[in-house]
Image (cartoon, rainbow, N blue to C red; front, side, top):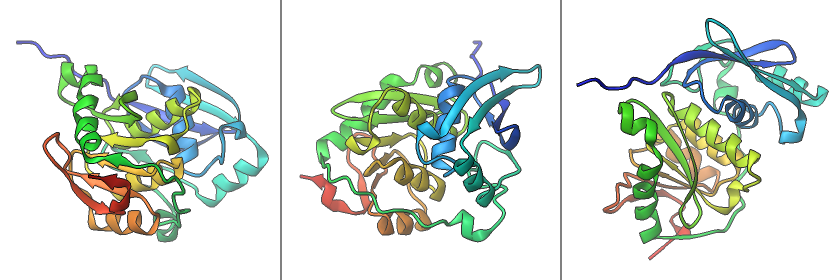
Length: 243
């Protein structure tokens, strides 16, 4: 039997002519990846801070080139990266421990989900994973709002989430109006990206780390994990999940 394999190529994230990060990623939706990365890393506060964006293919990989405003460029200097990011890592190369565990604004959204919806969310995401069905080697991130209305896949779990957040921005969908659903474990970087995007609920099929739970609690993020269609555990802010 022959099975398809996913692509994993270097993708350079370039701001104002300077490479901030090089990630190993699946080469699709790279424009959304660039937008999501810029937002969740705090380089830009809003998509309006990105003046131009282009994806450039090279024999060795891809560049996502963005020109950003002067204010955004100054923020980038405060959170510098210089890294080759393996698919399992979302924090490599940050220059200080303070930047790795940055303060997060509390999530303001008051939306709720029923327990049945949490169970349905991970089941529904399985229907939006064509690359996983072909390869069994990629992660997915989806957005639940009465159903999965957007989903992205990548060899890197944090890349999939950045692509999803960028896709929501491109489609004019407010992350505060629904829940993010992951096929991966919940680590600190996944909590950070979800909170910065403004989504109030994070649902995952795998477990969270202790530090991720502590961060989610302080940022008013609801984490429902080990959600595989037949029940789940709630680790922080259970008030958003109703019976």
